[in-house]
Image 1 (tube, rainbow, N blue to C red):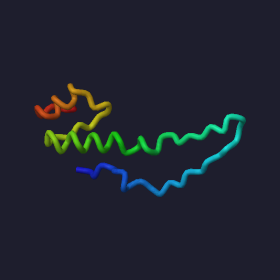
Image 2: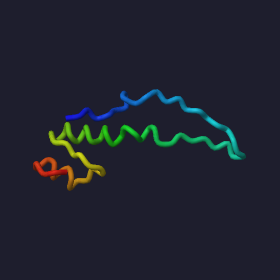
Image 3: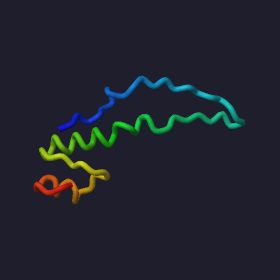
Image 4: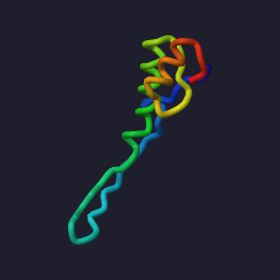
Length: 71
């Protein structure tokens, strides 16, 4: 079994804010989203005792994993 990547396993990210353009819009994209799927999959594993190895985590896949089928 492999360890699921969590937020503590992420490299240091230093955001750089650019204030170019007329609107002064700033954004931060995907870094907060990266560990989310792994964290949810780990929570499901801890809850049912079986891994669901494919995304998206659907109710059918969770039930199949819980019943011992391939998910």
